Length: 328
Image (cartoon, one colour):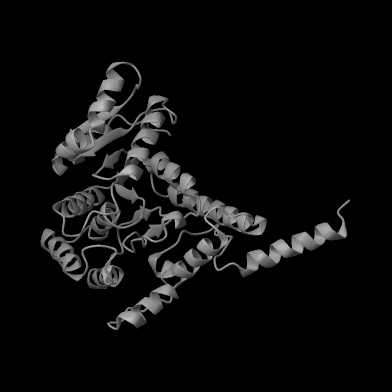
């Protein structure tokens, strides 16, 4: 029998779920940039711009997240976050019903890649072409290599000249997400070059909420639990993953991906493509390590590619489509 104190606790949970600054029941749809940044009105006055950003939906949720603790010790908050992330998962499953995961390409890489870095333009243009060729892109949904991924997808269907102009405008406005106009300049480009035909999927997390989510992703699955978010990206990118220069987070994702391929966790292995020969063989010689471990039987089923040529990378992904199972 349920006692009166139990009823009271259930009432307290319900009140908490209603009071949190995020919707705990997101079963029907993923976030959009407009929803995440609802309330943000860019302003030339720096103080007003910052105040507006701090008051937008995404910032309010992030401040609440920090106040309650990255690991929620409050049972009610833990329940709320779990329900929210479950809702995001269900919405993502609905998205995948109409978007073939065999065509899903992941791009992993550092948040610190500047808009002025040639690698940023290489990623964006490659993502643009892949999107136009029928693929759809997924990333961690933040700045740097992730922003370049979704910028490219957003510019799909535009001319190469328009894409180059957009990249140049972004670089001139703010080269890093730490610069004030990083977000407002992205919205400027979105208004200048509207997108209605192509999609891309960003999967950010509130664990790294100090890094703003890129608004160029047309669909955003933002999780509280980073481990779920990272595993989700690696799982749904059945078409292959491209690794661009990054640091500890990117290295973690490489080994997670290698485990999935080694065990054929989903019935087959997908390409692991390393973009940047010097970086992946000298600065961070992980490519040589993976080759060595596969040669000695520590890893199996690794479809490894190392290239500086975006066109070569695109061809590897297209060739893989000829071998991917018809049924997942």
